[in-house]
Image 1 (tube, helix red, strand yellow):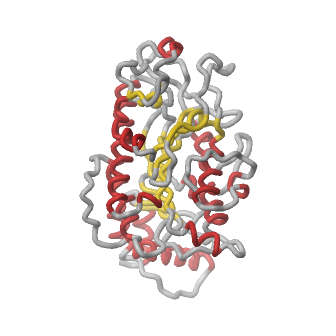
Image 2 (cartoon, one colour):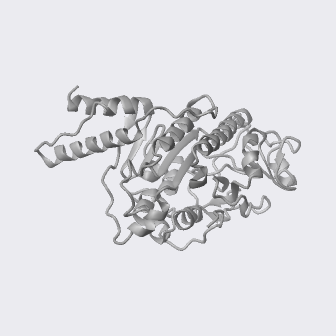
Image 3 (cartoon, helix red, strand yellow):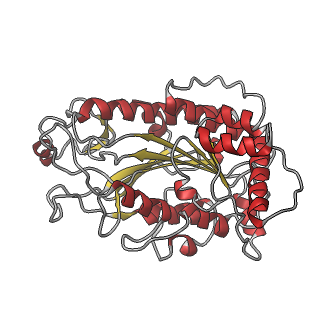
Length: 395
């Protein structure tokens, strides 16, 4: 196969896309800082479409909850009670083991000022770490790579996105997007860099091709014989792929960031069944990820965090669902996590003018905590402001 044929196949098939492969300009004197964070892994799980936080972490003791959700609310006798006022949706039962081991943090009321209720704009705000009234060209993780991991070892790739869609928070980094990991490896074997003289555009294409081949070489290897049982379905396959990538990089720099997605959580109608199924996939996937990474001794150096473009409206709609809302809880898990409650739950008696929940934690506080407490770097260049960290990591 000729090089041009491979590039056409990669572009047309949609099974693997390689975006933004330009190497960042490393900060001077960053090698020592990056050395301590080099073997740490961040796994981000996007809950696409806007997850309903009130039916995820349920305020079962609040009478207003039942009033706002007379038919779609989770019944108090079904809630997995974590404390007298709050508990989990029953389909999140696989997360209870993490909670009991103090490896699961629940951050309540996460959002941002002047919230935007457009899927496209709000997820862009989360992915770039911008204010609601500004537009940035790079993902927050791309800035984090330059700040926290600059000068570190030569990574196979700066990040791997598993699943469809663009690179999101990795936009602008030397990252790889895998629509189908097995197809990616098979196709990448066909790409072999060769020194060619020509136009700047051609040379750029060849550099991209070389990065593709290098990333494939780093991810290639015999499947690890996990005893952990992975869930069936697309998300379970993504969790398996993430686990295989981590296993393949033992003893080398590998990949510091993995992003996965699950959805759609855009439950405008007939929410209960759809939402329950998605939460079950999330919980089973996170539990399987923990089991697999425990097998290879990587759980203590892995941080898992969820995010979603927004939550849902407090009051159910007339279609047995919920419309676009604002604040919602996020999960953080890992062997280095200090489990428990963080932030403050929104007050159901103090909704905003649009009858939405008022956020109590800025999402950039999550990012600042990751940059400072996980990677040991200054979060200011990443979140572009001063944001209090949340303390959910053992430092």
